[in-house]
Image 1 (tube, rainbow, N blue to C red):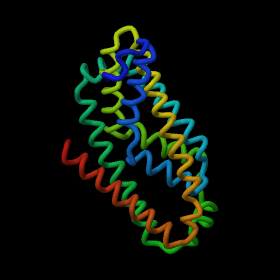
Image 2 (cartoon, rainbow, N blue to C red):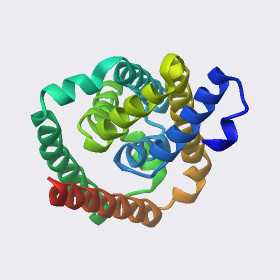
Image 3 (cartoon, one colour):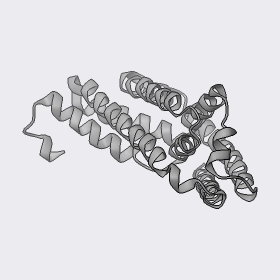
Length: 209
């Protein structure tokens, strides 16, 4: 990034990592939609955000330290993740569509029917690890980090900062949107939109596999 050229190397690498991370992570994808829905349900949002942040930290630094070597040695892993991702997104799209077609009592009833902490965390784990885009982003972060030489860990720290900022935005957004989804109709519309998003992502992955 040209505007970072005059900055100290470590800060420049961190800033570049932050900008790159925001460009990669700040999208409303499968994981983001899941986090938003759990937040709107007030279903263990803090635990989910903590787990997602931990996974991002683990794999961002693992990528910088050599995760790309693994994918280069076993190219079939990429194809396997694509197949698993299509199946997982298709299943969740179906579940969201079924919820959208049911009658309910809005956000209050949804909160009462919130999943257990274990189920919520398993869902977050699935939307993170069974997600080809997650792996592609992580490998890309590792690849770009190496262009910073000895400052590559600062780049990784910047990418992690971007991850934390995006997760905070999702958590805050869920809280702010809660009053808008108090009615059954609004909740069903949200589930319908999530179903369409998941189905579109599944089709897109299927076409690239």
